Length: 94
Figure (cartoon, rainbow, N blue to C red):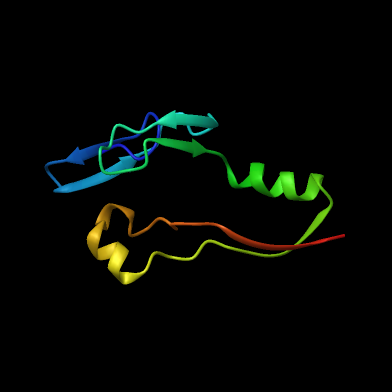
């Protein structure tokens, strides 16, 4: 199942492990998911893009966090256990 453009998985049968590979990391923009259970049109922007937009529009960043997924999400989707599901930022006008 692909969760981002040009992403995939590498399996090492000898070690019985799998790793997620993210390709085209620097590419930003909208793309279509092939996952029938997911949102079909999704965006792919970097944290720096969001934060730069806030600063450019006169905001001062107070706090930024990327919380870990909850135990229910991690259990239901173990491939996402190490990925924060969202970015939260607190800012005020400078």
